[in-house]
Length: 78
Image (cartoon, rainbow, N blue to C red; front, top):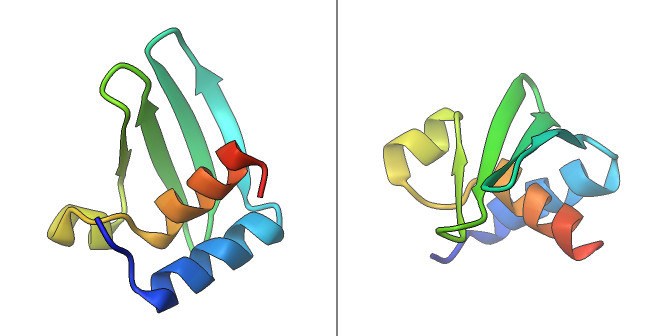
């Protein structure tokens, strides 16, 4: 899925400002907290290789949000 440049830009700054934190990691999933205007939970499913977020954007559009993009950058190390 393709993110808009605004979504990518916001995700980039969330990552660069250190707003992404690992909450819990299990064998199947990694749970992240992303501190945006509100705190959001992002889950990475290692088995399905899929991301999910509790934000309204992801819930309505089922597209990667800025929080997921920030987590992807975090996992890549930038």
